[in-house]
Length: 113
Length: 115
Image (cartoon, rainbow over the protein chains, first blue to last red):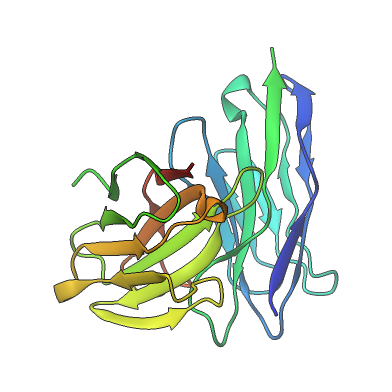
């Protein structure tokens, strides 16, 4: 079945450091790919998405590129802030079949001042 | 509209008791999803409604679980004869149309503890 694998956390960075959170997926066809973020005490919210190969999703300084050849959707940010501390979830929806999100296990990011 | 709301936020119950959770989606959203999340894991899909029709159920949704969405508005998730393994955060989300074209909005969840 479809699945998403994320790097384990926590990831601890100093403010203004470069961030990469790895995400790879297993799915047939061309799934849509997503990053959701969960800030402390809040519900999950969409950060960015990409619906076809080579698309780049971006939002709030975060970027991720849909790489079909490596089945990856790594999340990057050039300069993290303390306010970016949260749990980040990679997710997919297949192009056929299930119409709900399949999530990875999440990666906790801690940014220190 | 203040988003997706879930009630209660926390529930402690004894093993063997029945519990029911409620989800109020964003008013015009026709799709509603239930997920379960355990500590350190990502949300796991349970079931999905389009309007009042329950279109898909996960294998995770045993016979003790039932969900409804009467009139395509709010939804309830009932767990009968709760077990300690049911302890988790239960999340509800809603969307207007396909998630390939739009965004899922999540509630803050109901945390269930079975003692």
